[in-house]
Length: 68
Image (cartoon, rainbow, N blue to C red):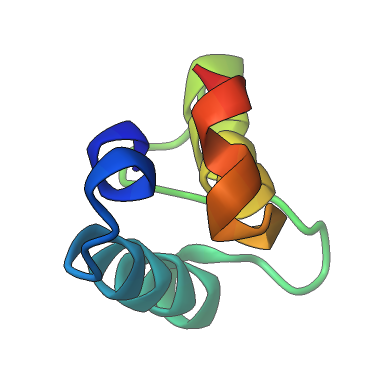
């Protein structure tokens, strides 16, 4: 995303959005709001990783340079 914010490209954001949409549809437990990526438990680090992806996606592309 940092590279894309500098070069003005449009490759990574759609890929990231597609991944986020897929994770929401497939891995999110609607009852708890938690994301499950296999196994009996989902580590907090996995939860925070997907939250970070969603956070980056809501920032306007010109402001993304300040995220990193």
